[in-house]
Amino acid sequence: QFILVNKARPLPRNLIDELLPEINSPMPTDLSKRKIPSELVNALGRTEGSPFFGMIKRPSDPVEKKGIITDTALIKVTESSLNNYGALSLYKGVGKIPDDLNGMYEIMYCFWDAVREVFPDAWGLPSTDSRLMHSAGIQAMGNLMDRIVPRMPRNKNMKSNIVLSLKKIRDDCAWTEGEWDFGMSWNAIQAVPTHIKILSEYLIQLDYKASGEKN
Image (cartoon, rainbow, N blue to C red; front, side, top):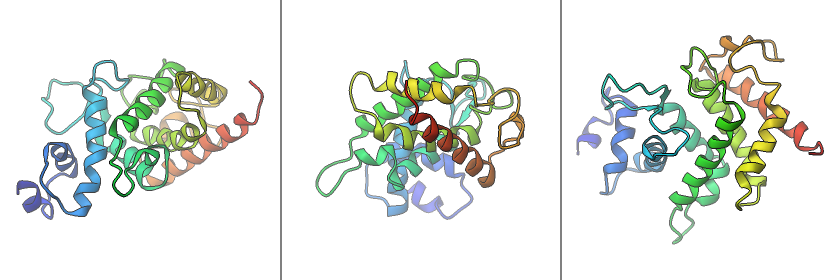
């Protein structure tokens, strides 16, 4: 009732998103669609061993907790993937078949753990020092995930295959220094739609060209 009453009030969206996984009663469609993304973000931030363990900032976290990634960025990644036929949509329920949250989590874990491995110098830094950890970088890489993952066989080599794909574009990325080939310095990238679109398209084009090369 608290969520429903405050949905139309200026209650922070990310606070509602954090509460959604705890609600088991029926909810309006717009809220129910946001439950799965929030559950995945919770799992990624709270599961030991996850590439995002302890790194995601949520509204209820104490001040002393030093998360470096906003939960909103990852929620947008999961929402986009689920709603735009991306990698996570492959595990959505159809008819009487339930959603496969474990499958979705494994995909997120596998892809982002590969990102952490390929870009170690940019991983885990504040967004002011690494645009990979910035909302723009997270969302752009999420869009890249939706292109890379569906073409990978779902087997024990999945992460290593993702790593190979990411390594092919690594030298063209400017997460912490230098300039992107499309004419922007690394720290000029901001979390605005135009910048996210430009960065996403560039990464996807790099991957498309690299995927046609021999290993």
